[in-house]
Image 1 (spheres, protein in one colour):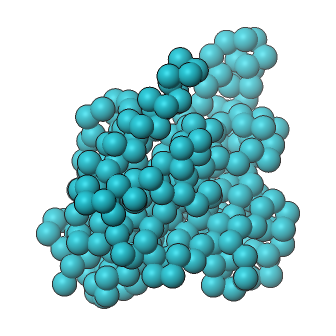
Image 2: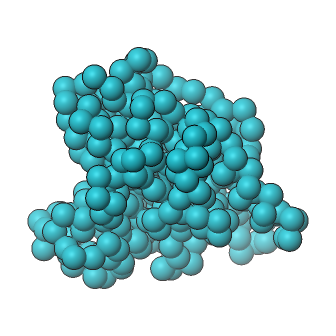
Length: 289
Ligand code: ASP
């Protein structure tokens, strides 16, 4: 029985372990992706996803999330959603319950309410303090950069179906209404049962310029191992942007194919991912840039 799951950053380990349990018992890739994201969304110590995420410039937490089914390429995504802890679940409902792919802002929130999701306060005391400090730094012209990370997941189930998904609060102190790569198909995620899947984390403004995840999947289609596909896709995106602008944001990718292989790549130090498969237990991997 062949299965696998991989997700960005070591904070995804608990979610990856839960997803691995589901896949081991014959669960669906789509459900495993959702489950992995929920763990991180619910964890207030992860300041870049779901509950306890980083607010925008106006102090509101706006969340982006997406999920894709590699069987028929169906997509559900939400962007700039306020007041809901688990945007991945709303995205999944967009996929199953609507004729659309992406809902944003108030429309997404009204849809979530109709689907029975409960509104929650997402701002924690700790994040509120960080936000106030960074806002002061911004006013004073000091370094106001706040980290931004996404949980991006790819899963392969024992029936050879694949899924991918993302969830993030996006970049800290972002403009109200800003949307990154994470809910955009081909940029922050992609998956096709006939090949494999990819998902990204990093500066969305740059990642979306090269549709990096779609490109990585197409590289796997050409026969590249997921790790090579991730490396080539990151390198191409980095180089293409840097050559004309002289600067490029951090970016990292994880990829998995439909045979149970996986790998990751980054253009910066310190990128980690968690993965598990029919061959290996849940573990954290560190990527060399
Ligand atoms: N890609 C996310 C965004 O731009 C943030 C991140 O993963 O670091 O919204």
